[in-house]
Every structure is written in structure tokens, then in C-alpha cells.
Length: 242
Image (cartoon, rainbow, N blue to C red):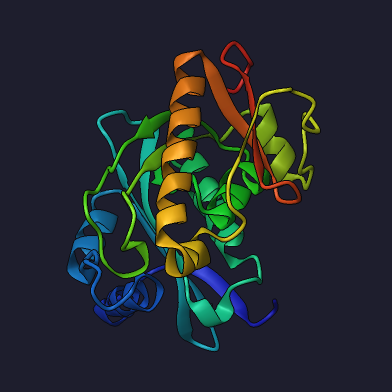
């Protein structure tokens, strides 16, 4: 997209626009990260970068330093609903990778909802992150887009210099071709399921929770996601992922 530019945010107007974008993505009732907080964290070594189209902010990524100098926590990734399906989320993450590598940051970590296929396809399928930690109801009761189900999250570990991530950066989307026997299936559209059949949506949340916790306890990693079968692939923890 020739009319799209990704760069670091600057000026309070752009940080306030990032505030408003959060409401557009997660709902008016959701708590957002204030623009002034993002600006201060950027000044102290975090990332706050946006995607601009014709001068308007249509997506952004926000992350902050951790106690480990080589590790950044990526807290927010947002793309305006009207601009989804264009690969902008992945573009923002690759920008974040380049930004971090220039600063000797080699590991980015974030949490995401494991039962939402869009998240899984981006984080594992396109970016090459891996997961081995499950948090039950991590944020407690939520509003907006996340209302109506426990806020379970898994941790994505993105090892920026790993073979799997370098391969994804070069456009090689599948490393193992789903040859393992261990897989976990999720609903194709959990958001719609949550609206139309909340009881079944809850049962699916609990099923996926149980299967993932069992897998992690046995030493397996989530290493890939197949959008055709809506299945995560699991591999043994001794797999070289870094």
C-alpha cells in the first residue's frame, strides 16, 4: 500500500488519536492506555509507532521496556476495523522487530486470547512466535469486545533472531507443515459464537483452556497455527525455538 506510512508517533495529537483508536477497536466501555502515558513510556525507551494513511492514524503498536534489557513487553496492537484484512497488523509487528533489533532487543513478549483465530494466525502463523504459558482469567471481567467470557490469555514469546522468525520475515510461512500429532482446535469465529451462543462459547473456552494447560504441563509448545483446520500445532519443548 503506497499511501501507508509506518513511523514512531510524535506530538500529543497523535498520542490522543491512539487513545481514540483503542475505543474503535475494543469498544467505548473498555479501559484504554492514555496518550500521555504512551508518550512518557516512548520517551523512556518504549515503542509507540503508528500506521498512517493519508495523514490519519489507522493502526499502532505500543510496548515498553522490562527488567531485562534484551526483552520488550508489547502491550497493544490495534488496527482500525475499517482497515483490517490488509496485513497492517503484521506490518506493524515487523516494524517493531526492526526497531527492537536496532536497540539490541532480541525478545518481544505479549499476551493474547488463544481462542481467537485472527490472533493465532498472526502471532504464530505469520510472525513465528511460540507459546508455553497459560493465564486463566488474566484481566478479570472485561467490557467491550472482550465481555462475556473469562479473559484467558497465553504468552507469545517472539525470539527475533530465531530461524523460525527469520524464515517468516522472508515469507516462509510454514516450517514444520503440521507433521506433529499434537494439535488443539479452536472455533473459527469465537466473537460471533459468544454473541449467538454464549453457553457453548463458554464451554469452548473451558475446553481450550484444559487442553492447553495439559499440553503445557506435559512440556509441549504451541509453535504454529493452521487457518484451514483452525488448529494449533504443538511440538516438544526441547525444540530449538530461540
